[in-house]
Length: 125
Image (cartoon, rainbow, N blue to C red; front, side, top):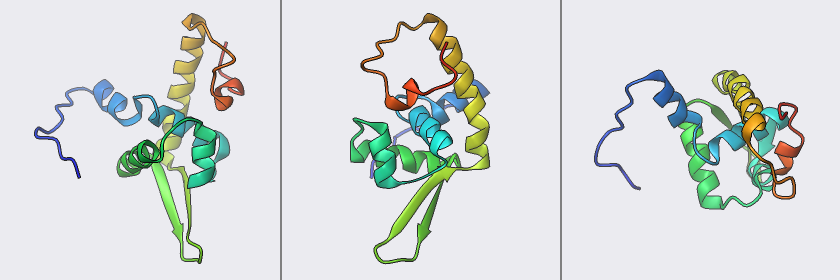
């Protein structure tokens, strides 16, 4: 497993927040889980669209480690795992919704290529 040579140098709360839910996929995962509440891995992957398994698995691991997403494993055959937002994860949702609303004012959208979840978003302008 890859380990960075240097520890991350996060010096302010904004950097911490962007590290937790920034990037292309983490905010999308949070938004999808906020809308759907509980999803199995395959359902989450389907909602995400063109994400690869490796990227989804890595993003979920980071979100779980940051206590944004909860992974619940059931002792069944076949195994069943469900993902949902923690209380900390739910607290991020209004922030992402505000960013979405702000971005809607300035971002020219191509509705043919918008994520399905974003087409249903109540926070677009």
